[in-house]
Amino acid sequence: MGRSIKNILITGGAGYIGSHMVRLLLEKGLKPVIFDNLSTGHKEFIPKGVPLVKGDLRNPGDIRKAFKKYSIDAVVHFAAVIVVPESVSAPLKYYENNVNATVNLLQGMNEAGVRTIVFSSSACVYGNPLKSPILENEPLKIENPYGATKVMVEQILGDMSRAGQINFIALRYFNVAGAHSAGGIGIKMDKPTHLIPNVMRVACGLKKELTLFGNDYSTKDGTCVRDYVHVVDLAEAHLLALKALSSGKVKNEVINLGNGRGFSVKQVIDAAVKVTGRPVPYKIVPRRPGDSVNVVASYQKARRLLGWVPKRGLDEILASAYQWEKSLYS
Ligand code: UDP
Image (cartoon, rainbow, N blue to C red; front, side, top):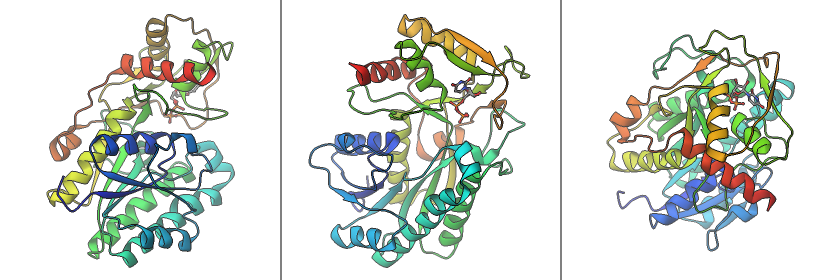
C-alpha cells in the first residue's frame, strides 16, 4: 500500500460486507474508521478499538464531523439500502439513501480534500443481461429504482473524476455470500430475501422448506443462474482497489467482481445438501417478478487491473454461510 493511504473511512462498516472489509484492514495493519447509522448495521460487528462515527449520510453535518475528527486518506462507500422490491414500492427512500447520501459524502470529501473512493456498485446495472459472461462495457439497463441509484452514482463519480475532483473505482458485485472463517460476522436480517441465507435457514431447521421461484427458465435445469462470490474475496478486491488508486496505476474504472462461474438455484441447493449434510426441501412456485435468467461475470478486468482472482468457490461459500447461520441460533 502506498504510504498515503492508512486511515480509511468505511461507510456501512457495521454491515455485512463493510464488517468484512474492516476485519481485512485490521489484519493488514491499516486503520479503519466506521461511519454507520446502525439502521441495518450491527454494533456487535465492530471490532474493539475501531472508532465508530454514528451518523447518517443524509445529514451533511454528520459526515462533515467525521472528516473533521479523523484525518482520512480514502473512503470505501458501502452504506446503502439494498432491497430491490422495496425500491419499487418506496423509491424515494432509495434515492435519498443511495444518491443524496452519496452526494453529501462526496461534498464532505471535497471539503476535506479527500480524493480517493471505492464504491459498491452492483451487477444490477446490467439489468437482465443477454450475454454471459458479462463484460464491463455491456450497455447499462435500469430495471428498478435500486439499479437506477447505482447507475446514477457511477455517473456522478465519473463526472467528478472528469472534473479532477476524485479518483474512484466502482466495483460491480455479483451475488455476494459466505462469511469470515473466524466467525462473528455475516448476513443478519430478519427476513432475508437472498437465496443462500434462505437455504441455510432451511438447513438449520429454522424454515421447513425453501421457496424456489420458477423452474421454467431457459437454463440447463430451468432455474435461474447466478455467479456467487465469497465476501472475503470481495473484501480483498476492495483492498487491491485502494492499493491501485494509491499507486496511481488505476483510476476511474468500473470493475466486475464475480467468480466467473454460474450455478443454478437447483445446483446451489444440491451443493448445500452435500456441504452441510442436512436436507434442504423446497417447493417450486411461480417466477419472482424482476428476476434475471442468467447473470455471470467476467472478472478478467479485475484480474488485469487489480491483480484480483477469486480464491473461494461455491462449497467454501456455502460451508462458511452454514457456520455463520448455525452460530446465530446457538
Ligand atoms: N431464489 C429462490 N428462493 C429464495 C431466494 C432466491 O428461488 O428464497 C432465487 C431467485 O429467484 C434467483 C436466485 O435465487 O433466481 C438468486 O436470488 P437472490 O435473491 O439470492 O439474488 P439476486 O440475483 O436476485 O440479487
